[in-house]
Image (tube, rainbow, N blue to C red):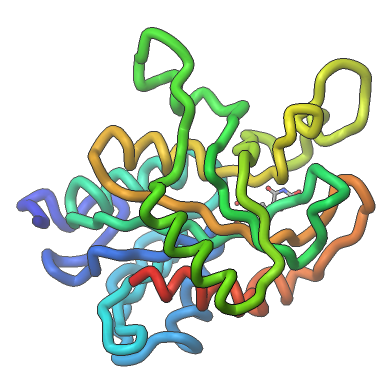
Length: 240
Ligand SMILES: O=P(O)(O)O[C@H]1O[C@H](CO)[C@@H](O)[C@H]1O
Ligand SMILES: O=c1cc[nH]c(=O)[nH]1
């Protein structure tokens, strides 16, 4: 369903070069890693701004992967163009997140059923109240089934899409915290992705690997963040 608006200001792909199902890591090098290590018959479709994007197959089924950059404005641009100009229907973010609860451990998977946010992105849609960004139940059901089958440690629930990586809201202080509300982890993009998908009738899901803990201080290294989240990739690719 691509239109004459392709290529867009941010994606140089031609009509038909991007699959209906696309994985969306924040880091474009993680997109390359997924394409190189998990997909076959790979062709690069985007290099604009070095926001690498690839289409190939996984177990014979067409799938794409592309970086989104960090934060709601950035994924807001890419997800909008992918949905409206390239006909993407299933958008699956594969990201890293910081644990907000003691029960959520480094390397656990989190499926973001809902996404609270400190970003203004959703408000700018002009709704007459606060929209609650939620994932696609269909994608969530399939992802949870795949995680169960693989025997993975996972959590399903709310996350926080924060506009700040170095944020005071991560610190333990007086008053209500996101953890008090049972919010599992903090990342920076799910809310915008879910809102864009909802507004366009597309399906979205965010799958996160916990890279560090706000509670215990435990953390994974930059290299592991870029490459080693194999379980998350396999669950996400199984949705293609
Ligand atoms: O690992 P990615 O997908 O980039 O996700 C997380 O990592 C970045 C911050 O380091 C933010 O984009 C956050 O959402
Ligand atoms: O946004 C993020 C991602 C990983 N870890 C964090 O603390 N924040």
